[in-house]
Image (tube, rainbow, N blue to C red):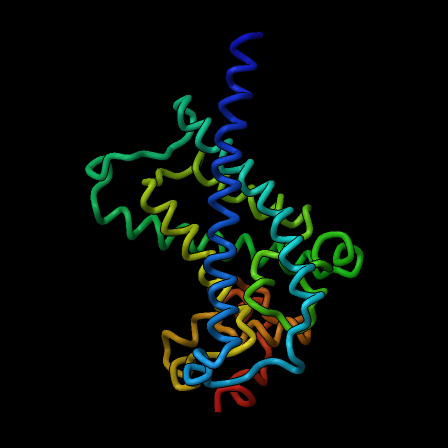
Length: 254
């Protein structure tokens, strides 16, 4: 019994630490992006205004509240992962030579692709009429997104998204550097796609590499039409499964 309470105490300490890290990360990246792009400083970098109306304080407040609730569960996932690592149960490792430097990049790309597929299936399911109200309505409540919307999730959605990383550390060897890089990529790209502005020139997304990536314009169409563009990083799932807006290139990239 004493050992059980020690485990709970350790888990609680981890949770508190990660909750603080996640909140600071959210306010620094989402808040910093909002402050920059919605002020005069960011105007020279804006190539396309994606908003139908100015952001409303009520919507920002609602998004931030949902993000805080989501952070509670994301921190619990992180605490569980580290606790499991301490017990030798995960496939996380810390010695670079264990799999070689090449594996850092390889595993990073593989997990991005797996996460993108997992997110696509979840996201498309969230938009089913019987599920949307319970799983995904909070994320779309603000109408036009802002950086604050990037991690505004209803709790069931936060749980299902957080479980991806809980599962992957038990299935695939990952260095801590790779795991941190994946989490930062997810955070930054979620903020970028919810900017409400597009800082990229249309020519970038006409390039073969740009055509594979989801940007702010691509994702803003999802927030308006709901039935297209469900991917997280890449466009190929939408194109393969028929949820890519056929007018995207013609209307938005010319």
